[in-house]
Length: 142
Image (tube, rainbow, N blue to C red; front, side):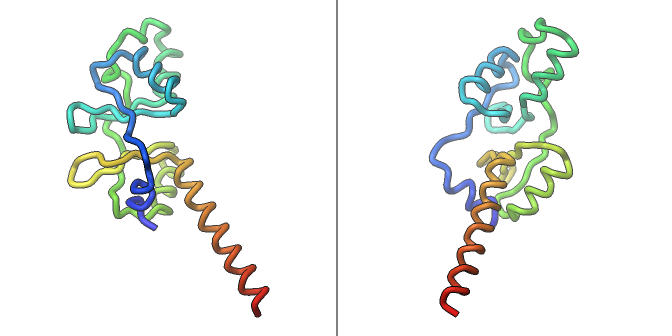
């Protein structure tokens, strides 16, 4: 299955922040929404990603004063992205190799979605469960 099917099943928009937002504001959004990362959008363009790791590293390195700085100074940029047609298992493999937990989904240079490793693991578990059920059904009808 491609990423497009995972993104299509969403019933809510992507929570994001601006490169000009403060680190404090972005951290508050992460906490309020109980999410691990935000795409950083400069208008319609993806400028980077701000994640829990970015927050942790900058606070550990520079202290609480970093909370007043703009996200653009601490975000991960450029962001690693995938396209709608990317196979979900290939996306999961990319996340594992690159040790990242979130991927912006782009189409025609514009971000159209955002997936987490949890989204992809859930998809993989659904496939495994469906295959197991098919096998049980086959065995009981054979």
